[in-house]
Length: 125
Image 1 (spheres, rainbow, N blue to C red):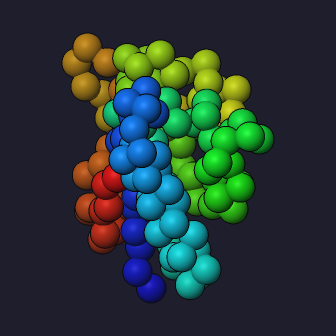
Image 2 (image 1 turned 135 degrees about the vertical axis):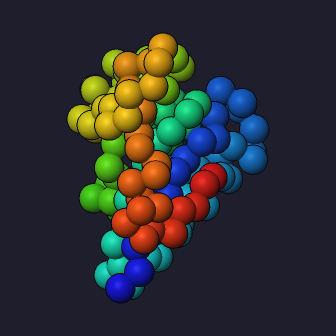
């Protein structure tokens, strides 16, 4: 069985169709792979951590899809959430703040290399 880690980096503050499209496409892939009973890890990283506070809103256009793939969400990068002002939103959404890898000057980040070491395909949006 294949394993895929999907990282969402796009920034909702960009206010662009591209940023929203990248969010949707990341979740589309997660949805499709989940339907095929494949292992999926969806992670919010970089400025993408800001999406968490948006997609949990009932009136957000991606809310229904987010609900459909919520079981694949591993969490959001703690260091990124701190830098991009999203820590409270991630906590309010009930997602884990991931700080597996100590990086100087941060509160810790997602260890992307662990997914590579475990044989995951890595997709970034």
